Structure formats: C-alpha cells, structure tokens
Image (tube, rainbow, N blue to C red):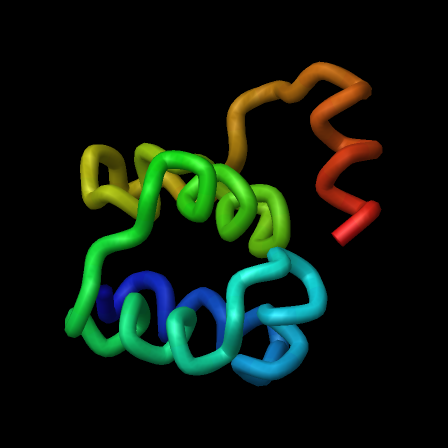
Length: 81
C-alpha cells in the first residue's frame, strides 16, 4: 500500500487526521497502510474520498490519481467524516 502512504503524505495528513476524515480507527488504518490487512470496499471508498482520488488508483488499477467526476451527494458525504 505504498500508494496509500505516499498519497496521504502528499496531502499533508497524519494517520490520526485520516481517522477523523474516514472514521477508520488509526490502528486499523496503520495496518492497511502497512499491508498487514486489507481494506473493505467501504473503507476504500472513504479513503478515496478523503484523499481526493479514485478507488481504482488505491487498488493499483490505474496510475491516474485524479478522481472520477462524483455525484454531489458523494462530495458532501465525504466532508462529513
């Protein structure tokens, strides 16, 4: 999950800030970031929203960090966390 860690650092976020943005416990987030566990679909979605990227980028399916156009409801939901 090198992409996840690199992208988080590029955005200037700590793991604690990611916890606040995603609702994923910091220790669980750390395990995901260090490859000790996989994220669920929902966790991947929350992380992608928080880091302004796509789930495909996080999964290594594309090299493009730019997110796809999103529904306005997704953008608003991503800000709530």
